[in-house]
Length: 425
Picture 1: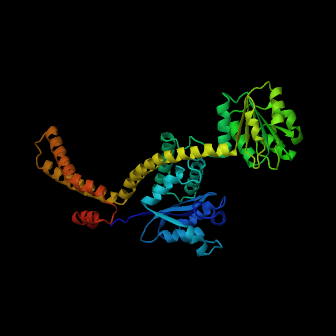
Picture 2: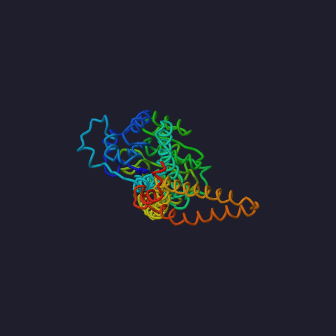
Picture 3: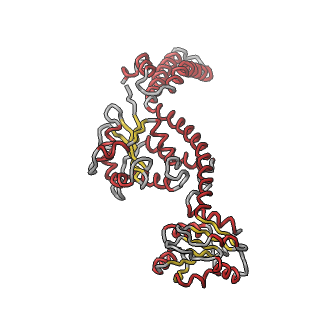
């Protein structure tokens, strides 16, 4: 009797597990391959893979349910960690079989991410799959599961707009900039402040082809570092008034109290610019720019509340597209599960067909040997008729077997017993 294989996925994620717990459970760089070798040495575990990112730590495995279960993976996840069960158990989720496949496909498609639609998780998933392959822990089932998850992610991004609307402050700020100007290639952006927000904005602006970048920060060395990284120009903070007329885009994210740019100062800047359009984004809390600047001619000022409104709209759009993506995932899960649940049934189907064809060949040969006067055409006709009879007789049983859920189902057991397949073995 063939045995059924099972899929398990055990993990913790940003949905409930605090960062401190995720850090303690994480498989650091270079440790995943050794951990995978330990994983597939566990009783009943035949294949395994690990996904360890800042937002999740998960173990996916396939094996013999007669020897292994999800608790083994849970133990593996916490092995060697200085953690009490009470700290971990409330945050652990377990998915088995079809649910495990669905979860993998949703993760690959970024439907389970902190920011739905973000692309980074797919690259991380591919990296950890490669680790599993090199460690010899991924077999035929996980090969197919991961490759299918990559294809599902590609289909989701192609057929839905799940990633078309940006939902981070830095990316939305640059989107608005691109809407104001037809092209950024001949434009210069001045970034005031040199924190994480400025760094992300600079990266997005470079990605959109901005002509030039100027960095100003109270700590000049930090402005120099950012300018070096993003091919820009650093300026001393006290030189802001001098350089402002050169900028078509000004983005402020500096800390501190008091406006860095007043209405009167902006009026002077615009006179020097001959009143050409200038776009300002105030990401500071407290605000960097006097809000009355927005009343000036050809000056477009957005603050963080304006961007939050755009982000809410974009999140709503992503959520609507996510519903379409979920339908795609569910359809793909159906296809994979049909393949997976037939794996253990296939030996029965193959055995049934081989036995029938063996009987057919034997009887056809015996019949033809007793009819030596038959011509070649007549012999081919008899062989074709015998083959057709076998195919028609097997069509019903094989079709039914393909629909069963597992190798230990009543239909499989009956087929093996009635046709004596295990007796032959």
